[in-house]
Image 1: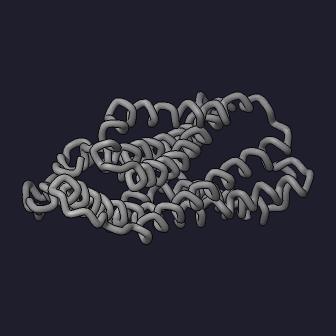
Image 2 (image 1 turned 135 degrees about the horizontal axis):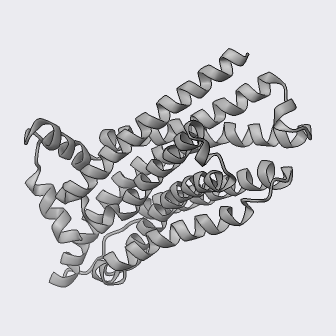
Length: 293
């Protein structure tokens, strides 16, 4: 069993490095691809940053004695919370885009500056939830409260995603035939189509996030119920807990592949960046993006 724990620890380091590299590539693509440098993808970029920070701190905590301090663990939790809140923010943002009419009113309200402020606020809230408990090592806080916060955020996020999909399903075009209304409806339809595709993408990310978080929460709840220190826990429970941590980092590694699979602009940007201009551009979609945003 000791060899098993060592193997899991080695696999964790490999997954962390792969997650860091793949998400740094995602940052480069988001920054270098014109179609991705829009506020439509603002919270997605914040999500990528969280997926870089969490495995980075885990890796440093595992390999460097200088980072084996409680504050580093709180930074890991802060980064993971920022990932969850970014997924939630995407749903809230898309819900506002669908409910605030006309579309120009939403564009006037949700500016790049406000998006940046919201991204910073996500990190502030995440730090406020986890940094104050850095020195608190009671089982109630470490094994029950912190995992419960993550589950609550994910459940709230799922509710917002359901609300967005319901709003998409209930969309009806206006009956008026004036030129202004027709123009607004064209923008609304384009936004609706882009929102549907984006929400399906991040619904997949949300499901994978649930799948990776639930084992970690279960492992912590089991440690809390046992009322024993981690060092004296059965080896099987230690293996389960370490595997659950590995799953959390695997979640950060999976997300860039979901971007590549679901976001055409991300895929084209990678082709252009790797293959020196061999990506497939879509001028029609670029025009819709410019008119919409």
